[in-house]
Image (cartoon, rainbow, N blue to C red; front, side, top):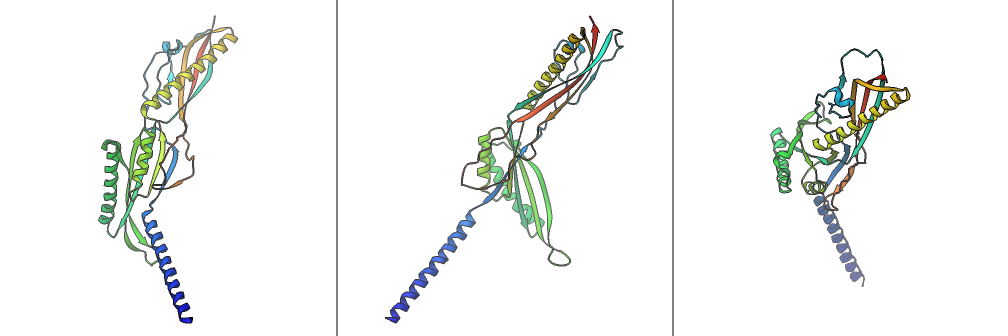
Length: 292
């Protein structure tokens, strides 16, 4: 009976040990397959565009045919001041809120090697796979560009003097897309490769920014001229020539709006909901008021 109990105990112990080994193996295998990518939304980014101005006459301003002024423009009208005129300075402003129509993805890849050539080669292999995947998703080669590249030496600082132990290559690709659904698909698909992180920012395309900027400028000019008309009416005078116009535009950029997000690939589809952009125009105007 004792031998039988001992035999049963040994069999149970073997089964428990086997089960433990299997669990450890399964966890290790699952961990190896689980690829964690850090996806960070960094907020709004200033548009890479400049709004060109057109030279217009004083007549168009005075008649409210608003002109396009380049950002930060000052318009000054030369000529002697009318002896019956009084100068008045007014400020007009307007803010336009518009939803971003551009998402900017920066895909960061880093790879190490014993030599600089090996580190560069390892990073290039991953980058080429990412580019191929982007092309499969409908992104043209012209829409993909290198945003950052750096090759650095890796040292072991535990020894004195520090010893070179290898090299690290960092390559960041930049992709701009207008389709939010496509941006989410890119994040999901590209994250399956051996990458370090993806940062996402929102912005306005050149066309959308210019439209918002000119609309804000027009409303700011209208606001300033309305104030001039009220002042002239209260003083029993009439609006004369516009002597000077100073304009400036600001762009609402949210530096950091959300906490970093860690995404486990394959757990869900990524969705992006960018906040609105504010484009503000401020106009300072010096106008002549003349007696009626």
